[in-house]
Image 1: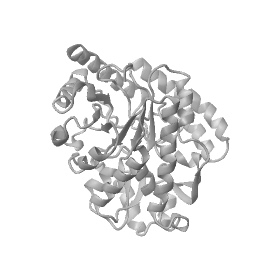
Image 2: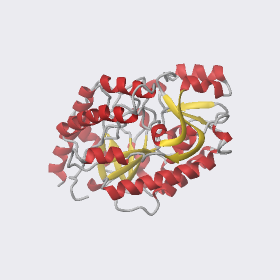
Image 3: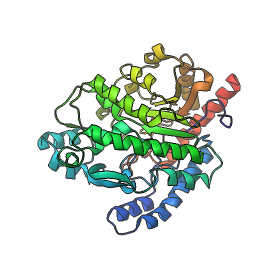
Image 4: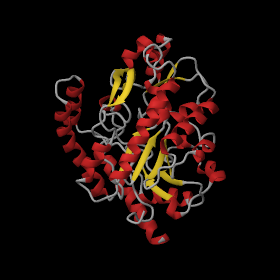
Length: 389
């Protein structure tokens, strides 16, 4: 992409919401204000998130997902046939209620403040998923724009809930077919409107790879999912769904984001494991870029990528969004130099490990610290451009 410099700096997507936006979001969810009234408040928040990114020096910006309750539950506003349910409400449908409640406490997952989109009727588009977000941001910046969308596997596993959804979709695969069609149409619309990058978020892939099959529902980035299938078969299914969404679409950079959880600042409750078991599936996805976390030790060492060196671009996670420690440009530069052993300079994008505000009510960090982290990435990128240009 000609307008991007070497080692372009971008974001994974989300930005902390200001309190006045959270108030409007609560009022919207309580049906006290209309969708249009909420959008007017969210417009201001988007411009504030954009200002932070531009002042930090970010090369490719997002709208900070300011209009979204979280990175995937926002589809409730955009699709007919979906109901937003708190994890507490979903206890009524979990096979082992006592275990699930204990699991939420153990994993530091707030059952009342995180909400899950649950299919209750056949789904149909009511509004575009993200085109409106892109078009607003496009009017206010000249920088390339990244748009994030929840991936098809994540949506299928989180939205299909036994005892509710099976009344209209007998199996999750039936729901997946409709989701693939909706997501593919949205990617094409975003491409045609001028989006530079469309990122599919599939964090639940690590839940599949790093945990044994379970007969009860598990928690990963608020996805309530039954882990009944063989992990390899589930990862193959995820790969096929992503490829059905993006296959044959050109004219826009496409990426998939994988992390190990971003719902808590307690690192010990988040998943651990390197990328080795995921890589055969990631390399088969028809995307140009993997957006991966690497600033946390839980992600393992970069040499796990060795067998797939230069297979794709990498969106390299170089700062931890959940930490108050602002990484130095020198520390970030060392991580980038390590990545140069596996990727060409032109294949490396720079970003935080994950979003700074994945869940509206539980941001990973403050705007001030997030901004300082982005500035540190930009300083490291500037130094390396002189070295490698």
